[in-house]
Amino acid sequence: MDKKTTLFEMAQAQLDEAAGILKLDPGIHAILREPMKEFHVSIPVRMDNGQTKVFKGFRVQYNNARGPCKGGIRFHPDETVDVVKALAAWMTWKCATVDIPLGGGKGGVICNPKEMSIGELERLSRGYIDMIWEYIGPNRDIPAPDVYTNPQIMGWMMDEYSKLTGYYSPGVITGKPIAVGGSLGRGDATARGGVYTIMEAAKHLNIDLSKATAAIQGYGNAGSYAAILLHDMPGSKIIAVSDSKGGIYNKQGLDPHQVLQHKMETGSVINFPKADNISNAELLELSVEILCPAGLETVLTEINAPRIKARIVAELANGPTTPAADEILYQNGVFGIPDFLCNAGGVTVSYFEWVQSLNRYYWEEDEVHHRLSKIMTKAFQTVLAESLKRKINMRLAAYIVAVARVAEAMKLRGWA
Ligand code: GLU
Image (cartoon, protein in one colour):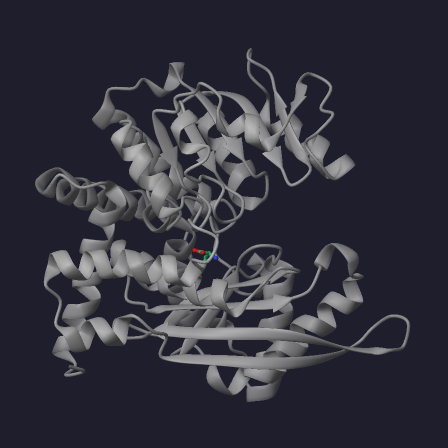
């Protein structure tokens, strides 16, 4: 991505390409290029030192043609509304790709949760809901966790919304703790869904995952579970993992459970006793079958793309690959599983959670896994068929599938 292109412009350019191929109605295309609604809020929070600090927050409702808006809330010091808009667009395509009856949205608050106390985080979480509660709801817009937000934060937000509306409302948010209406299987759902798509990709490419090596960039919810599930299910060897502080490498393989324990004790994966420290940049260029970017945006660029040696790049992060890098990877025969397909397991189980919360009837974990596997496998096969038929990369194929579905709903609703 050249420096002047923003993440949202990148999302718009990707849409434009799909719209061209689909010969999309110009009115529908114009609607889909912009979010339907964008909220900017200022959240006053009483800090532990007694002073009030004002945090900026956003909620973007991108499109609700196929159902209420859906998407996570990020707490990050570098958050911008441009990034939230791009992520809200991708949520729209994500829900359509896996064919669940939800639209796309995203939220963000500019803050550094690593420097805040539990009490400050709780007051910020409640304050954010105080500002947006009239615009969200179980039939309007349903938030969830994302970067640096977690089930506890969802619990506070659900509680705040329920207090403001005057009734218990677990359907307003997903990714909640189990005891307050969460779903079994939501915790590792993003990674599990991604591993199901990796298994399909490996079948397609004749790769034996039990003999494959993998490198995981990012060791948060998605990355750590991806390492654990790839290690425990097909039995792949995890030779490197990283987080924001750096990476670790052992060509004999790492035990991802022990690495997680180490991260919980020390705050990072680095300095793990049975490995050498490496940089994030080095990790991305390792010779592995599977590379999983599972952290933040734009880590694969035209600079490092020519040096990527992985056979499969499974995008558990949102937006890790720039369009220029995409083209280079495709030309070099790297098989990419695009973000809004690869990481759609999270929102798919969020959809299950929403259904369960609305019905007050909860499923067994096996049922969640089984339904997730069916949805992810079908979505992967649909996108793969489109990519083979049109001889285009998997990202563009996923766009074609998703945009066509959203456009059909808009047309049938008479929007253009
Ligand atoms: N934040 C996750 C994502 O980007 C999950 C969203 C959700 O569950 O609504 O897909």
